[in-house]
Length: 362
Image (tube, rainbow, N blue to C red; front, side, top):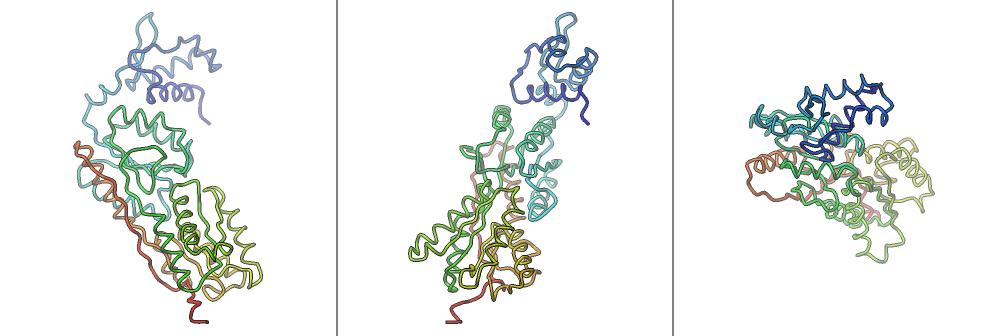
């Protein structure tokens, strides 16, 4: 359980890091902090003492506590040597490959790497950003959290810009953010995947997309665009949308769809990513359905395990390691004050065995 003095210390530190309290500004008095946080004078003094030891505040005898020039102190101590990576998931799925690609470049150039896992939760992202800002930061590589909507942490990003900390975004960016990014063309990829299924004779297609991330919104757009070009099929397609914390619910929904009679059941499903596609294949098997004979399944990301499932998954490529390397190289160029431009990859169709060619049955 977090102690009262740590809560108070973190509150003051966050106000300093996000610029709410600026250099030379006087902190509230001990009595004011005691009343605001319902703590003792000892608790207040302990929190302030820690912040003073970390060079965030200084005390004037008989005059109170003030915000110190903490950035100048960090620069004086040593040149920035840390590059941070914020990822929605650090240890699973495609993210270790992205991080490994970035680390190859970062370590070769003499920087230390610090990782933070946001679990696609804005509150966790805020904590991660604050912890990163305590470091001697040279720059940040960021996979945004729930990127389809405006971030509640814009104040921290504004402070990072004000402090001149270079940032590169991967996989997506936040609305109205102008930072350089390294992304895939998600809309074009799912458009291509949907057209591929149509060419194989599929009409009743379900598209399941996570729409609190911009990637999912763009993939949904690609799915719908393919059907808009085939207006005679518009009554056949089924978009299924969900948020990042609703995976269980969307699988229940797809389970209900797969239990329909053969003439109403979709002939194919496109999943937001391979992780969901693999779960859908397992779900179909549990229902006694054959993939691809009864239902075809496609994914996105070309996850390593996708080639080993039964049947091996047809999917769209994702430049995982390359994305990490490119993001790190762009960041290093920004650190050197060179102008850089965003990168957008064109995903490739990776054909395996999870899609049935219905045209051969006609």
